[in-house]
Length: 591
Image (cartoon, rainbow, N blue to C red; front, side, top):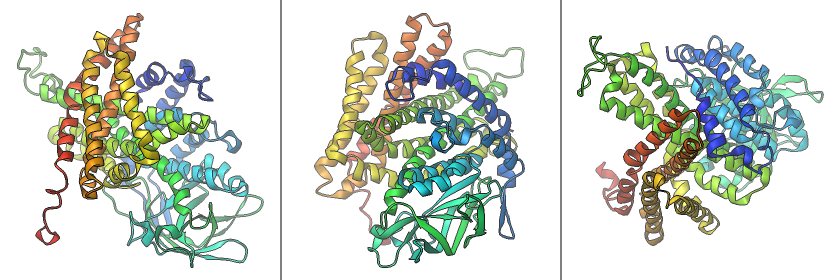
């Protein structure tokens, strides 16, 4: 059975040596000294290694079951969920006014990675609740916040997001779920939603559904969509639970992965709902939840790669197969361990360089969110908005690929279920699909985010990379990192220029290259992160660190990314500049 150990040392390095959180003037960061964050990470790591991770394979093998309208979660989930709630982990970065601990997002994100890596399906119950609570916090009335948030922050009640219907996924303007106004200000919600993660289960007293629906007489399409709070059980004025609402589970989807999470068909039969935010402005409120979810899904892709990588490394060190072509490394044994072979090293270095670079990228994104929310920094808000589709799309595409590479290290043993490696691949696969399929993320990046605020934020990103390269361009020790990053950044700028010169004449020239652009952007982001990490490690060694081995390993991994992974930007640029003609050449009938 796979095991998991939280990468607390790497997280500490990123927070304190790279992001330098305790030196930041962002409110709440002054408290984040090394001892404080280490205590949080160590305790979260212990909980996930000892309690949450062992249930990952249980959830995969047992799944959830629906009996007489009740969904039962896998054995051990309820007890583990109680431990998570008792430890206050569900409200780590939520406001103290509602029972949270008000930690910065950068801490919540690091801890969130641990939970997702240990057991993605289990962690989705609290993750979706966090997103729903954030939407109520941002758009709800004071009464709604008081009614729902304390129990949602503690996960005594959980939450969901209800968007998709059988006939509409990405195109939500096609939805048919209706919201009929009532004399008391409430609405009667009727319709069916599908693919609703954590839609029904036995781990909470109540489930608070956020449901998109149309009020009759509103504008057509997406402009006529509103968002509603629809609790499973009605909430009395004194906060106690009342009658069952008109919402029920029709079925549990049979899925490729995340078996431990109940993905439900939800039926709303004149269920009582309450408007969240303004009428016909439901997507604005829902995007509060969706943007958070997209960053969380990027984290899921990264976390599955981390879990798979840890087990692949252990197997590669233990499994004896063949001899090192340069001379036996285990002469007393019948063969050398797999890890001596260059192709195994390539696979492991691909994984290691992506995971550590991706983690830095993710935590930098969380730091930007903190600057935006805690310091009202509009530039940080614009930059993280630009980067959100890259975090979601690139980290999940690459994360999935890395779980396949980890599985490949096992050979045939990775394909059978005994070693549990297929679960990482199956669980990671959904991250490329939900919360906006990655093709949609790429379209959002190229079609909306690049031009946002007159292109201000992408230009700020280019300036950030240029500034880093200029600051360290004369440092000979940084040469291995600066030159490749400069080249990759020029490729990204050239791709953007191609879109500007050709996209207006034929939008397909931009859209056909959007997926490559998302990956090109992702590689440049990771290149920047590796440059920053390399600089931090060089500084640590020069300052006489007691852990030279850790920092030399960082530098070697950084050089690998720059030499073996970052050159992919040239390929992506070549594809982009080939335009849309070859992509769109065939008539539909020719397929």
